[in-house]
Image (tube, rainbow, N blue to C red):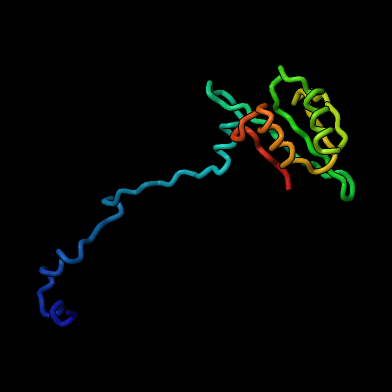
Length: 136
C-alpha cells in the first residue's frame, strides 16, 4: 500500500488527506460540571413539587457514645408520642429538642438510624423515598 501511495502524483493524494484548519472545526466548549447541583436544587425548595425529607443523622459524642437525630417530620405529628414509641421500641432514652433553625428535633441515645427509618416507614408516618439517612 505504501508503494502505491508513493507512485501516485501528489495531487491525487489530497483527497485522501484532507487538511482542516481550526477555524473549520466545530468546537464545543465543555461546561463546568457541578456534582452538587442536584443537592443544591433539592435544598432550594423553590419548586412546587418538592419533597419533604426526613433526615436521620448520627452524631458522635464521646468515646463509643453516639446520638441519633430525626428532623423533618410534619409539624402536625405529636413529637412526644412518636418519641415515646421509639423509646419503648428500641429500649433507649431520648428527648425532643427545639432548634431555632430546624424546629423540633428528636434525639435518641445510640446509633438507631436503621431502626428509626424502618419504624417510621412501617408506622406510615413517611414514605421510604422521603427518608434520608446520614452519617458515617
